[in-house]
Image (tube, rainbow, N blue to C red; front, side, top):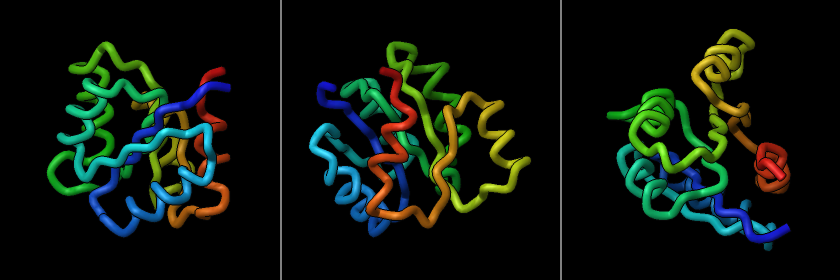
Amino acid sequence: MSTVKVMYVDDEEDIRQVAEMSLQLDPELDVRTCASGAEALKEARAWRPDLILLDVMMPGMDGPETLTRLRREVTEVSAPVVFVTARTQAYEVDRYVSLGAAGVIAKPFDPMTLAEQAKAHISS
């Protein structure tokens, strides 16, 4: 497998740092982080990630709005988007999938398995 570009989007700096370190444990993953939905749209357009891990609850533009705008405004990026959230009730997960998410990773995530969970959503 070649290097996979993964973008992690979360407004909380400490969570971004833990996620970045966790994902970088896998040498096949090239990781970039963003602190907001607006930053994610700009970075996705420029970097064209293979996978986007997206927090649901962010100020300004939340995860669902970021996903909607990503699909509408950044059409050159078709990477799967996986929400990373503590909101994992069945009806919430169904809503995220109906919005176009490839899946959900529950917060708090296990730093030792985050890379494996992320890679499960990457198309081969």
